[in-house]
Image (cartoon, rainbow, N blue to C red; front, top):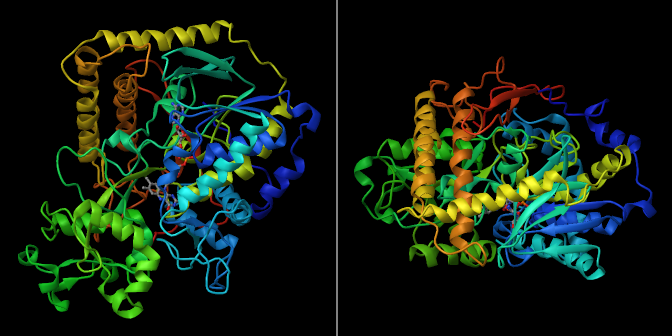
Length: 638
Ligand SMILES: Cc1cc2nc3c(=O)[nH]c(=O)nc-3n(C[C@H](O)[C@H](O)[C@H](O)COP(=O)(O)OP(=O)(O)OC[C@H]3O[C@@H](n4cnc5c(N)ncnc54)[C@H](O)[C@@H]3O)c2cc1C
């Protein structure tokens, strides 16, 4: 398959301008004739749905929660990046672009990333105009803090609730359109299939979660903004409901899935406490502005109270290994450093899988009230979960699954290889390469929804003949039958294990074999184990209840069925990428000091997987990445 990224010609800083100049426009009077389905109402979906409706398109929006404002975006704590340079500390569009390309270990597309950096400045203006209460300095200007992988302060934030406040802004904009009748909102509705005919997205098939009714919706374009797949690993910092179903089922309909092995492990999470945990909690990366990461120098000290370990007996790991970035080294690098010291037997806490995040110095320097003002809600959250006071005793943290850089392949227009299927936010693969920098996901989701799709979708409509199909078309009927028959099959197995048990096994397999570090052999072992689990699932899962009413066990079973296929794809991608880059660390490919070793001869490309049928090996396609502005070099934070 030829993957054409459709990058505009011309110098990098002028590409987006040149696209906008040359794009085709839809006459205002004609916009209402185009119907757009937007699946997902997180930051990416809500911003897209609101903006498209404001432009005059007819929008139908779907989410599985009871309200759009419960999308997982609400969990984002730390902040959102933008190249405003309010601090006058040397930031610029080019620097944000450069940091993002380098942070992604030179595995992202330059043109997309440059556009992201350009529109980042508009996002902040838009959100301020909506009333998003960003933190302000004494003089009233917006305040910034630093996040990993950057030496400037460009992160805008609302205490530890940035995602929630940004989502409230986007949600209000969405509600305004719902009130105006330009968006029809379908909450508690799960997309279970994509309808494709003549390689064009025609609509979706959903299940109404309260009534169990299966229904088709038709449109001129389908936009997926359905979030990431971290929950393939079972334990992650994502909300419990996050899943891969919409993107994976679109993959089965022909959309290619790019770089599924690029998963991000966040270094700053509360360590796992026991076997019955269903979720992990992130402690925002912003804490690393002031917290210092350390472990005892000597394994013999790990059982001691941290206050009894003398300064000289502490190893401030990140400051030692990466003096120029210190505690703000990027996530992949920091996570591996934590794993290494724990593997050496110097991890702290009951499981030995933990490092300290210590605020004593910051409190001494800035005073407790200042630290409380900056991070109070995060300290409260930590105390509620661990029963420990982070002001008095260093927090304990350990890496956990947090974000997924892989996703459906999209071109510069954010369109997948299926015409009319657009993918936004964490659901697409585009901008972060092999590792996302902190505070860049919110930026990307809102860039896609507020500032990119509204242009590229118009261009698509204006250059493609209208051809909306009715829901009576055979392609819809076939998809509806598939959804109904899977529901029937799941309810009819009556086995002995819950889908949660399968999910936990699949997640544990991925974490242990394709987690923070991987080998060819471990990836192959994961593929085998997941195939076995999948076979067992379809003969031994127990899904109680019926399909005609609210049945959360049934919802979960459908999502787990997809994880059990997708997990294999993830492991396969990890097995074939014979290099280490960003969050993908193959033990066979490392420098003597343990740093990731890229292969810029054979792997400077995105791998986009093409579905070939049930239990068949998918095809690996490549989109070469051309670096015209930034020269890939060894990524160093030392
Ligand atoms: C704890 C935590 C903290 C974070 N903090 C930050 C931060 O400080 N800064 C930052 O930049 N990033 C942060 N991130 C990452 C960021 O929050 C996410 O990447 C981003 O919010 C994803 O937005 P989204 O719109 O793409 O998807 P989501 O917000 O996940 O929304 C997905 C939407 O899709 C819908 N959906 C999914 N599947 C279906 C289906 N089959 N049918 C119907 N609807 C469906 C859901 O209902 C939901 O509305 C954080 C992530 C976590 C986990």
